[in-house]
Length: 201
Image (cartoon, rainbow, N blue to C red; front, side, top):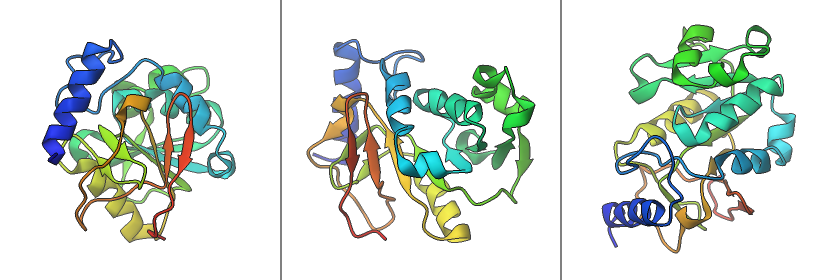
């Protein structure tokens, strides 16, 4: 199947099974899902997350819990603004104490975050996905922003571990990939953690 056929299959499956949650419909989005908070908690088990002082996270809805958790755990959060229109925001945990949930939303990130191109090196990148295979090949919603976010960080700082949080049904047998597509190193679902064995590094 083509990239778009896989995306459409995953979006349809999530809607039909009642897995998809707000915002809906999930077509043409990084789909939010029931269990996103559990996936975030599983991400917390990674030694790389535990050691991280700075975490980069995409701005999409299914990773909101990751952003909230990052701030509650006292880590600096770097967030890409939607479609990279305003670059990146850096949010310091000390200014969001007690307000982490709001700060983890787009509106809150703009309120508490500092817009800058000179953000600190992330120790971990968390990205959203529509589908991922066990080789770490990732499909976003098709506009290339997720790949560009990762590429910009890797170009600036060198290799940084990339994780994605998804629902189990978003894990597919095969996702087509090109040399321009960024792979992920760790796949985290509500039920499992998969470390990918590709030769990216």
